[in-house]
Image (cartoon, rainbow, N blue to C red):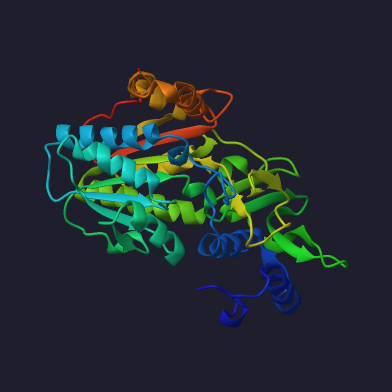
Length: 359
């Protein structure tokens, strides 16, 4: 449950935070991020070149969703075509990925029930315009327990609230949000010792070190991996992030396709952090799911044949060749989305290896 009052729902979120801080003291940065994104995703048109704040891979090209759908169909076919089977997407955006994946899956005889996990009524309406047969749930707990799941989460984990911990001369403390004398939000170390929340290997890091953890992302991964282990299936998590431990804040805010300060527009900008895929893999293994690996988006899509697909589409519609090649390059080139974005694959233990995770 939110700490913010229902009557504050339509007020300026920054003012609501200021009243809360004045009444109870500094709030955690994780609280600030969680409340801000909850308001943002519920109220705003967030995705798209026109009117949104950012654009995601499915909106760049149909090739992205099609290749995801083909990957899922290939996994399902080689696992024995078990029915019933469920497509599950976390944070489906505008529904574009689900629509393109559904079209590709159908060509290979895979017609799963389409479950979209989405809390925003406005975004649900947008998704249904593209996938009319979709069933919406607020969380994974409502997805049927019988039959394998084919799960996709594209740019979902990056928006999960992140706890930042900073090493001070007194030990590890959580980074909090306070208000200065001019009414501006500022970061400040909390008073509560947080050494127990820091991995033992990091506890002796020098003062000033900042590390990030995401309890919300860990909870999602714990549930998804457990479902795969118990029900069968496969999952793809696609997001920007890193595969080896790192220090420093990755928190950023985006509005109108440009970066702004994280305190500039609470509830009116997209707050995200890079995903720690090494930690996500560790959690998945703890639940007895099989980790196929984590590779760059460029490697994954190239191995799935995006270059051939782009050529085929260009041959069919030569007037769109330049646009198709630009979209392909944006998805896979190292100086665009190709290296920063990663793809992590998970399966049940008795499911086959997945294409794209090795040469």
